[in-house]
Image 1 (cartoon, rainbow, N blue to C red):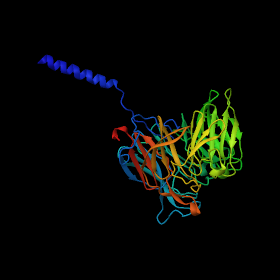
Image 2 (cartoon, helix red, strand yellow):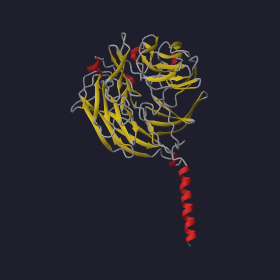
Image 3 (cartoon, rainbow, N blue to C red):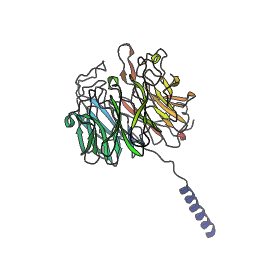
Image 4 (cartoon, rainbow, N blue to C red):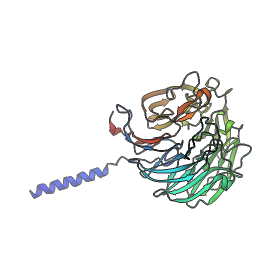
Length: 464
């Protein structure tokens, strides 16, 4: 009898040892704009390939205020910015109005498992910008701190656990910066001890702050007759050097991220309405940029020493799809993969370009449900690669699973997740939209509109 018990204990111990050898399915965070590596790629395992009957499971919903800012997910918490209007104040029907609107901005911290609010930080903030729904910028979460940038230039560093303010800046007050027409929308970049931000002051277009104290470490570049623009700073390696890419309405710039010293500048015609919005994408020695009015341009980075030149630039007679060939993206970050570029054009066409020439290979209207006649101005669908497929979250609140390749677009499945609550357009082109980039973490998607944030499970364990 004792011998049998010993055998059972040995078998049990061996079983535990074998379980320990099997790697647990790891849940990833999404702690900043475009995820852990700031490239928009979702790398978690155990993700479904088709939605279960009735759509993905809703884990929780939590009320929030207005805003375009996407959520960040880190350490079992969700961080989000929103807007609260003052009593008796309402947003204008004309989204292009720059009326002064009293209210506040908030940084919210929610439990990622159930959506319950853990803390909030709120401060008074009067808006005087177009499209005044709320903040635009995804928080950055790292090292026990949260960095949040509001639409009027309030930069705040908070303790991630408690919400306590550790330091803060106000770009207009501290740097004499002019708030862009559509507010501050450039997502800060954390690089080592530096938090790099587009600020917009005199000789301080871009500023690096000490991440712990807020002390200015360096400032660089000047504006020449244009606004700041909206493009997030990015760091890419070329010629054996890490290069900070700053895209401004009149130029593309490569800087030393440690000092702010300029490496190179490529001048180009002023981007109309200063709409430098989509994140630049790099593949090999090529750097791709796109804007609504200006079309597309390809920068070629030097291989021997930091430097760059314009490889090609394509702009049609205007931004209408019948007059364009390349990509006229409004805010969607394109995907640059191999010798091809994929992105959503100005009137909702998902397009594939040949990278070396800018030649259009195909177009498809399915993902955005756009009309062939080109009436859906400024259409949006965010593209998130995952393994051999893509997740697309469009402005109608639909989540799509699709395959995208040089051969074309193939939709696999679609589910409606959230109701669009913001308004876009003008005159006869007005429509309800959802223009907030979701986060993908813990095998879930976290997405918000102007009334709620929702967590839906995308785990393969749900079944089909």
